[in-house]
Length: 624
Image (cartoon, rainbow, N blue to C red; front, side, top):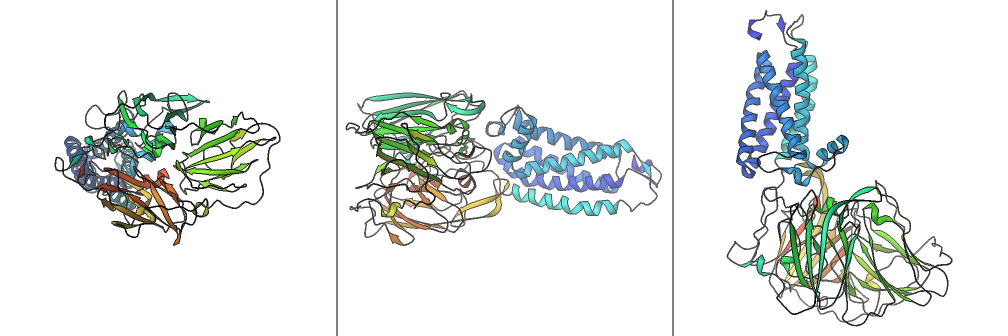
């Protein structure tokens, strides 16, 4: 013991003193996270309080009287905290909630380490890092044992420089802890039992013909790489039905994580929207869930996971939903083509086509692994063409185009129609320059055979505000609106959900603190998106169809344009309007998945609707 040693004999304070500062900092971190853990699971919260108290007592003891017992106790607490942290995110803990469900996949140590860094938040990572340093310093001090000290104050020359990074890391971790993952957030506009429950917002029973599908979400090795798939495919199987048919889909979850299915762009009843924590609980591994709605509107749509969307969609959980009109299809070839992140979706596609055949390509962008939001740059070469629909909704009087740059961002769809030429191929090229782990793709659809068309050096960019034939639009042309809101898009570096991130905001707030757009059924709603950033933002509204009113103050001059995802370019302002004709609680968010995950989401909520579901760690529901 230190008190039994000669005055000149001391444990190496150059090791013990920095460890004491670290221990005091980690105690502050544990106290800062305790309230959140008390709310989530009482025993864990108590454990953090007890651990923090013990460290707060041991830290000054190490500085004043660094005994073997104090050093060993501090080291054991540090390594114990590290073990609990790692176990909770890899194999799971035997008691209480576990974050394993939403974080660690794979067995490679490097992969596990990277996932811990990206999924656990800075608070846990910094605390574990500091505790590891403390543990190593204290073990070395014990190994060296008490030693004669010729210059008792020399340890200060080592401790004082170390104090600055220790204090800085502690402050960052505490600040992150004060902005934690939510425990349980309910997005209702009414108290439970006081209004309309989400369970009533379903499709009415009917006698429509039923098209039934089973989608099994499962890990599958596709082209040498493990993807998350529907029925072993990336993209998932195309669901194609006729207008007026009833769609019944059973999701079977064989993934190691919870998941859902969202029917992107389709104005179905709110309870079928597939948003974790809003319209349902995420479907846990080994469980199943059914969706049921009527295909009332024809067009090109798609489906994808809306649980931990930032990670699950790029891993392969997406597919096409095509609703053909009840009338006969006039096209000889009608194909949906999806641009996506997963490697299996990057294979070049060749479609057999004969001269004179009429072709409709339904092009869907599911690409989301990009921070800037830069859109795909598509060009159709080899034949004149028409853009007959955008986001599944027909344009009025579309005219023929030559090669143009078609900007298509995540969540958006173009339906391109053309006639195969007498000779030569038709090629749909994607000329976007992309970096990162995914391959760069310069072309991905060829039709027919023969000479391949060349890409011109310069091309104009398609402008949807001046395309097609003008026609009345009762929503866009309304003289007044019942609800009018501006949503200003900005970003800045800051703390969010326990991490230091590039936070994205509507009106200076990140989700779930973003403004709620409250509406009543029958309201005419005007929204203006003002982009103050250098990024692209495809803003997607669930459950409704937006009419484009203006771009940068200039009213639309061509065909009425009806969208569910509007591409707001850098420093642009777009004005849209919609009719509140589908009661519920609906998300409106950027479909650049990382932007949404970093806060660029909000709610369009009908007065008097309530949901029993919550977003946060208590439920495991994380829609973005």
